[in-house]
Amino acid sequence: MSFDTFGTALDSLIAPARNCFSITPHDVATVPSLPKAIYVGTGGNIALRAVDSAQDVTFMNVTGGTILDVRAMHIRATGTTASNMIGLA
Image (cartoon, rainbow, N blue to C red; front, side, top):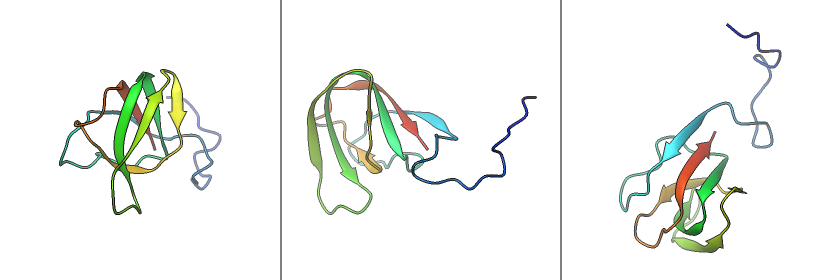
């Protein structure tokens, strides 16, 4: 087991992610855990709804390898062409 020097430190939005998970776009289901950001493995468009938003927006032409600093509660299948996304929480 690895020793975590920062294991007792408080988490914040600017702290490194403590949890990573795959994101599968879906038109109804929410993201399994609210992320601090989203890593985009394969570029394209990302249709999403941010945690405090009342409507969806589409980030166009997001380059693969980008970390998108947005707390998204929905990543929609319709309108999303990017893939291999990982939630950073």
